[in-house]
Image (cartoon, rainbow, N blue to C red; front, side, top):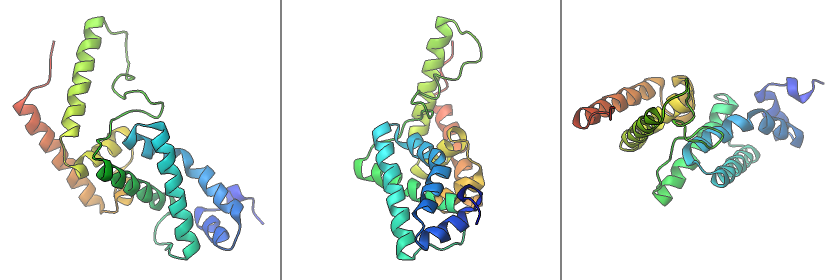
Length: 194
């Protein structure tokens, strides 16, 4: 018998359904970083991200144990879709808006450093970062979601489509409309300059 690390996700799922608890542990270990990061990018709160991460895998376990899991797609996109839906449900309940940060908890715009900027450059950069965040915050939820997943989580449109349970064309369309909407907002209020 192959070691668990060499089994595919599909094989691990089947083993777990047959009662092998270690198969589930291997699945979680294999995908935990990506799932947690996707959640954290939406909620920007370590404790909340941990709670939603646990809720995600509780839902995964419940679905697998009840026999409702269908092997139509890959395991990871399915888990990411569950995580994404839990994040959206959370924001609908609390009416909170997500912030954009990297996996270490820093504002994504404040960690991009290519040279030693002056104090003036830093002020301008922070103003522009806040301005871009504001633009993104004013997008409709579906468009905001695609922008965050594409540009800050670095997911492909195929991954975004699987995560959000829509077609690739719908994901591309949402990005297109997000860019159009952001351009319209820029025309109304141009980007801050020196």
